[in-house]
Length: 170
Image (cartoon, rainbow, N blue to C red; front, side, top):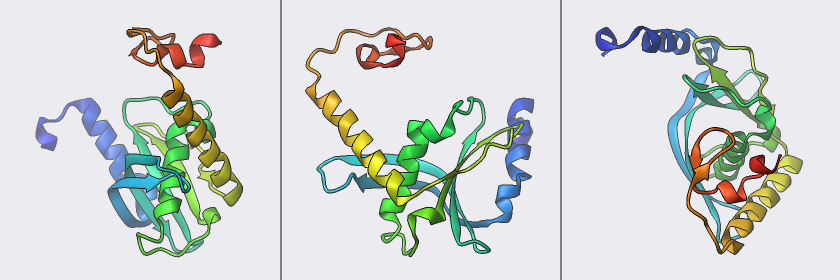
């Protein structure tokens, strides 16, 4: 497979293969989750690239590789990091792990050049904020009755949720 790969793909592969995060224990890779939000009827569904364990400080590090995409400017505010942190913590007992919220970290890793993005630390206070944010977004979507046809998003992509987007109002 590597013999047939492009130079760009090989650069990303080498960056991942040689990244220091791989010095940690692999807890799980390509973890598909289906997690209930609070005690509601709403669920988060997704897939996490990899979760590593660091026994020296009892931390679980959720890793998301960015191999052709940019890392969000404010990773701590990215919807992806919020969902992944919340989902892993909510599912930790099902995964046979005993931990506190502070034992969970999220880390974007950009390849081939890693700009040393700081990990996001989870907490019990953050869990409540995320739950409320998820519920509010879901309620907002459920209460929307008119979905106009796709428009051109200010970010330059076609999006069927353009009318709901906060970015267009900026």
